[in-house]
Image (cartoon, rainbow, N blue to C red; front, top):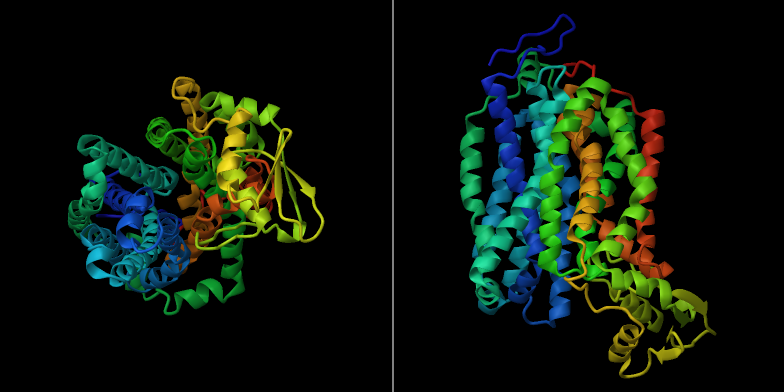
Length: 544
């Protein structure tokens, strides 16, 4: 491929060549595949719990499965460091070829891995090891794919070119949900629960083979190749990127002013929306997944639209607009979802007050970073039960040492009663709280429209982020520099969003109060991004 330099040293601004289309397709395909791998684990968690943690009670088994899932999020920044350094030292192409292979091999072997009944304790140990490999690989994949595509792109189309990479997380979720729904429906619940759940993992072997074959035919990034020929590649990229203040400052601002806000809007609009539908307002799982899939399908073109628009008006105004809209409208949108998806719950929340009477010293902030934490005081038991039942409540202080009580209307229930676990749901039901959403009362169209709006917010903040990050860092440390803030933002700020939202709701007694977390982070990034981050659409990314 021939790259013609401009007078200022930038890349040519001509139309898309066949090689560039191939670069975009190969990079996007591989990244779709990696996100697909990551999502099927989360979606199939209950089946993994059954087969790999079968010696403990089902609820404990699921907690251990979530712990393994959380481990994948936690190690992503370390993957960014490992593979970011490698990408700046030896090249973009071979590094993100390695990350894709590791991700695919890890997923394929989960599909083959014998359960606890066959391998004993070795089975869950190997499962967690495979999850750690997946998390490390994902930490290196995104930065490589985004950098590789941007360094091939014409100078005036980097937002458009990299926006194809931005579709991959949504398409990966879309593919995972669609495939699991299809296999589950075709096989039936019994067969799927017996062995059919392994099929989505095993199919990754085919995707891996196709993706590796396509990526092997690609050339190295022209920007990296030029640096290598001129002897300008970094010998110590991590030190340059994070130990030198001029570059470290950019990484910190990129995290706080861009990727943290992008992460909570992205995870809030896609993953927490599904969690809210199924866990908070009790919409049946398959129904919720179908509505999410439709919203994703309708919203995905927004990635390309806003990526293209960012080449015209800039990255910064589009991303900041997404932060602002999310901060202003999350409360009415999620309340609207309750109104259209479970109107009986909305009525109960307004008409049936519930009070938790407890010693404040017994009440914890129930943040479950891994899912393995235990909150067992009487106050925590009462509040956790009410949040799981989607009940709002007020807090009333009780004398020290008093066991927590729950007042539902005129009925008072004590947590030290042996039948509390059964009596509370019965009392809640008596006061009009539904056990689940009635499928006949769900307004499918309006619920999907609101979910689609949330996806549009995702496309606003996510479509231009790759181009913005690429353009913030010089080419010699670009892979390392952009990968770490991206994966701290998305792996930690975004990945722990559901746990944080649950903890806030349990502490305050309002099922919507957890939304203050994404709203606060989005508002923080709005202010920091506006004041301290530059517009970058016209910068020369060949600078070293």
